[in-house]
Image 1: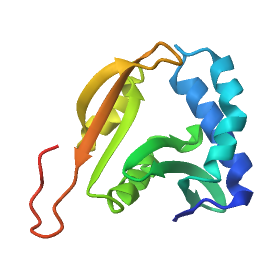
Image 2 (image 1 turned 120 degrees about the vertical axis):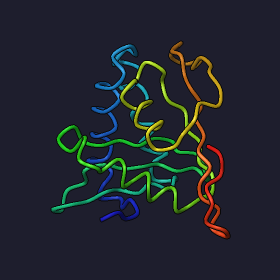
Image 3 (image 1 turned 180 degrees about the vertical axis):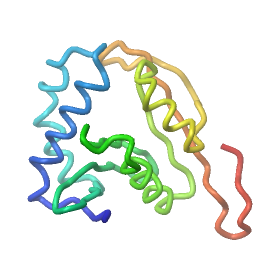
Amino acid sequence: MIRKLQKADTDQVMQIWLNGNVEAHPFVPKDYWVSNYEMVREQLLEADVFVYEADKEVQGFIGLVDSYIAGIFVDKKYRSMGVGKQLLEYAKKQSPELSLSVYQQNRRAVEFYLREGFLVDTEGIDEETGSAELTMRCKLENKNDGRKQEG
C-alpha cells in the first residue's frame, strides 16, 4: 500500500535514506550523507513523501516536489521486487511530466529510470559532491487522447 508519510515513519524512512545513499553512492564520502541527515529529516516533514508499506513495514518511499522526484529509496531487503516501480507509477499519476536528478555513476538507478521511460535531458556536476549528475525527464500519456508523448 502506498500512503502519505506519517511522523511515526520518520525514523524508518531516514534509515532507508541513509543506508540507500551510502550503498548506491560509494563515490560520495559517507560523511556527506551523515552531515545532511538532520537537514533531510526536517525537509521530509515539509515535503510530499509517500511510503510503500507492506506487512506493517515501510519498504520504500518517494519524495516529490511538484513534478520533481527528490528521490526514490527502497530498503535493501526489498529491492528488485517492484517497490520502486510502484512508487514511480504512483508519482506518474500525480503529474503529466516528471523530472529528477541522478548521479551518473549510480548505474542501477540510471538504468531503472531509462527502462521506465525517462530520457537524459542534461548532464552536469553536483556542486556539493563534485560528482557527475544527469537530469532526466519523462512526459506521460496525455490523459485526453491516450497517445504517448515523446519522452
